[in-house]
Image (cartoon, rainbow, N blue to C red; front, side, top):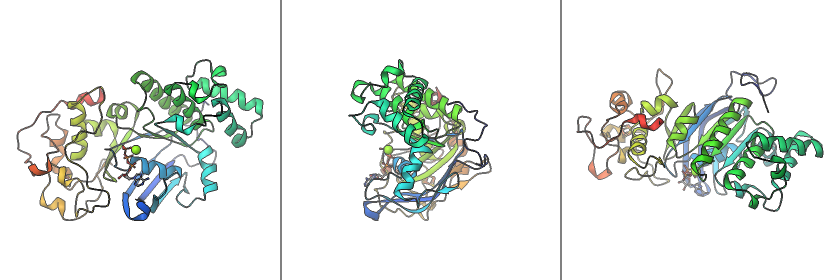
Length: 373
Ligand SMILES: Nc1ncnc2c1ncn2[C@@H]1O[C@H](COP(=O)(O)OP(=O)(O)OP(=O)(O)O)[C@@H](O)[C@H]1O
Ligand code: SF4
Ligand SMILES: [Mg+2]
């Protein structure tokens, strides 16, 4: 499992082309009646770790699941494109999805136990795909599985091979799932809240493991998390989702130190002012629009302290700046300095409070440097 990051994963692949290219993706739920993800576009390159953050219900998991071909019943990609190494994913047959998932796409989710068969040893669950997908013999698959278990940091991997899922801790199960996910050296690894259920020490170890695998295998990594500290530590770029849309996207170090969208600024202020050990995103006042609601302009306007009449007239585009950062806010340019100030005014006010002037007195705020602490 060692490949230099600069070495292409498969011969013939264009190293300049993104591993994953998503363009104008829309996802509907409730049998097509409600649009939950709208016009999402982004790329992930080999060896790049891209973070996805946003409040609960903002569309992070649906986006990931659409890329893995495992949308829940009643949910569907209604428009747009997602390409893996140039090959379209949205029109794949179930059989083609199965083959792709086993070899070129890896996934790790929050609850590893539910993705493993309780009646089979974890070793068998890793060795089986190695035999089927890579054509290894029984002996070779066993040896490779033990090697993989060792490389994801499981102690006494030869013994772990014979354990059933219920005999392992949550951290061990997550490592098993990561071993399964990377067994065939996929091009893209999607990790959706993969470390949320783990204690902080195990979480740090698993994140280190993902970062190492990214480097060793040149994996493209899409990492969904509620934890801004994880984003700051692990990712190169971060996309901020709000109510089914990307509202900001840019290099992580720049986004966390100079947020360009009021919602991102609010996330960072709440994280730094709240319980820093948990650093979760859930306590911003107000609520996003109901699923299916179509406010005429900015979907964040009812919670935004900087909202003006012009924010509510037409849909706000995700504009790309000269520096390549993308932001969905008509006032982004004029708010840039205010939002970059660690002692910025609150970016969110209760909807009933109405717009807050840029000149209003700063409210309680904590220096933003803490975010990357
Ligand atoms: N199976 C489903 N059926 C109907 N609606 C769904 C389904 N799954 C998700 N949704 C809706 O789609 C929207 C986006 O959900 P999604 O699970 O992608 O959010 P999320 O950003 O991953 O949230 P969380 O942080 O809580 O995991 C939500 O409004 C949710 O209620
Ligand atoms: S300033 Fe206007 S466009 Fe920008 S986030 Fe606030 S409401 Fe939306
Ligand atoms: Mg989710």
